[in-house]
Length: 162
Image (cartoon, rainbow, N blue to C red; front, side, top):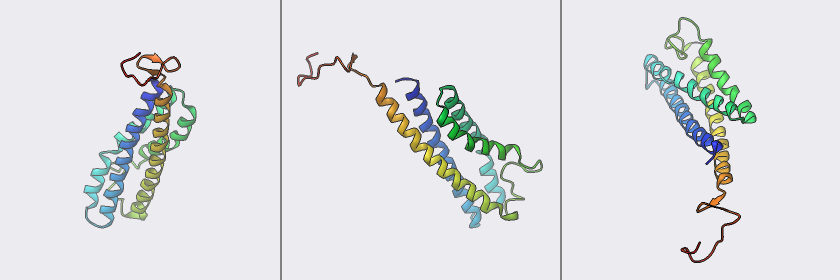
């Protein structure tokens, strides 16, 4: 297994975790919308995972850049830059990206729900892209059969004959 196989295995795991996290965000925001949660509890739960989300996305973008997958990096970096921009430009008085005092003002709840649905779609697309490249790179690297190069391996019916 080469570096590409390892990169894409890590990418699939990372995207799966990010996809799970975005589904958690959507469920928590919909619970707030239906009044199953109060604003403080909802925002505390969501703000707990904003920084790990940024770190996971940034780490994957850096790995794509380091390994030379330029097209995947250029496709992946806008989503990462967007979440970093939201985190950096949050108002100074807010407790986090999701603020309980502001979440019901100016239709922010609907905007957060829309943004997370878009993120879910993006992460779902990238999950399948990375899954495809993982399978491709693992099959491409599988050039040996029992330690012998595949071109020289002799296939017989007798499993004990080499």
